Length: 417
Image (cartoon, rainbow, N blue to C red):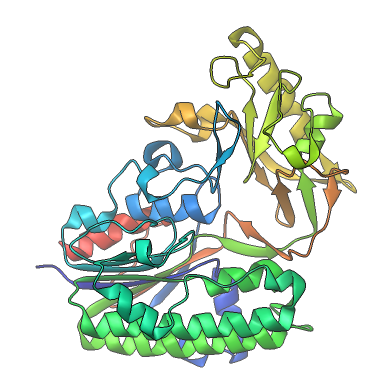
């Protein structure tokens, strides 16, 4: 029998923000934890979106090896959006490999819940609580607790005060359920994610260091600080290693970049407003899916594809050069434009985007098909970053080579077995 491990995922919480809040006194327990453990920035996945990052966290693999490339895919026959769920994951999660008793709670990309040696409560995008719970005996208990699958994010656009109320209510019920499982279920591995951080960051990140809604960050991170301090004490009492991590960083949005409109201006994509990609025909030579994924509209791959293998490489180079030149007020939008083979290697590489765009911080790449300009703004204030995710370890050494979210699997397995 190896060590017990408690792993708390803090969705979208940057390393730099944890340090800042500890220094400001907003997170005094975190300041104490930093004296006892080790905190380090790490990289996200490519693409740097939660579905891919948490899949990489679970498997230790990249997108072309575990098969998850984003929150949505395009059906090549109907051109309808398809949302990959836990059944799409092509590699085993580390708790299955370790074959230990485990609690897996609110981890994104684990819906619908599936049997394991222990307990699972699925995270985002979980649609029905009953299908999000294994074993089924826990479903009545969670309902009785008033457990909520997620925050009602639409309220942030319509009624910010109602959004904040809903956010803190959801977090309170989540922590209640988390502690119940921690103390009442057997486990050697306890994995839980807090996702309310990500929701607040997306809509109000400009207030993260001060401003109109800074109070909400103070309140949320105050609750988080108390929780993490209590969890560290509880973990160490059980001689367990405590790890916290995030799937990506965050930064304020300077501008949103509407990639399909950018392609349309170059005659490479024919938009159809509310029809999205469903009406795409042979006039479209390429299209984009979030986040930052560019696809050639190939014959044989898509029912109405217009591009043959002979045009493929020339079109990719044209796309690469066009995106590399994209700028706003003299600032380049993209740090790098990757061809698929440069970043996606594995048995599912054929499903990968033909190009992947890594943005400069401050630019949020969008795949809207109804935008009328290349650049714009919405109510969203925060964007993911590839760097500045975090890992924190107490009760064990943080390996020097651990540099990305995918590296957590190796550390956890080394402790468990």
